[in-house]
Length: 255
Image (cartoon, rainbow, N blue to C red; front, top):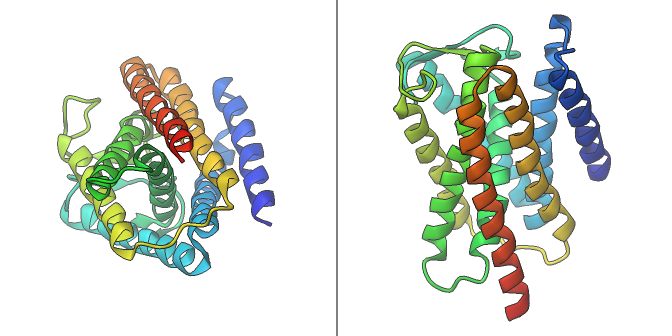
């Protein structure tokens, strides 16, 4: 079943890339974006389950979704953490003025950043907890550097009341992303689940999903003329992947 869900995600992703690349997505098919985010979030949940077991995978995934939706609600209602913004009506079913898909989106972000940070820090004997949390949080911000401009400028999923130098997005938003991602990664450190040694395939899949998400949103960014965001994020993504595969190779050789 887990492999079927992953294959469905890849199929949905390919369809989405084709439709978006040639601007073929009709307005009545906008609901497909919510299906994509939900499926991507499920992939991250399956990843945590496969790597750390059912109890942790389910518990950690639900924690990420509940906390992220609540924090986003505080952001919409009280301008907490991220700045002043509002969601429009095209981003799926809402709870407390916050789309439920946001919880799945955060689950996807934490799953991707977790895997890349885990690969970069594996084998470290000193300061691994700090390096894992710090790099994982920066990875989340890296993804937001392309997700937010596209969602705001191209798709108009939300509207910023504040402004900033990076495509009109306030700096507080990126600080907020770093803080919330750091919280989730710190909670993982405190939980400290035991990792399975027979799940390399899901590590590879989650690492791939990180790049797939960057590519899809880069295509959307190009269609909206956000060339600077594409260059910046592809540059940072190249650095992250270089560190990830270099550390994996170094770790494998040292065992």
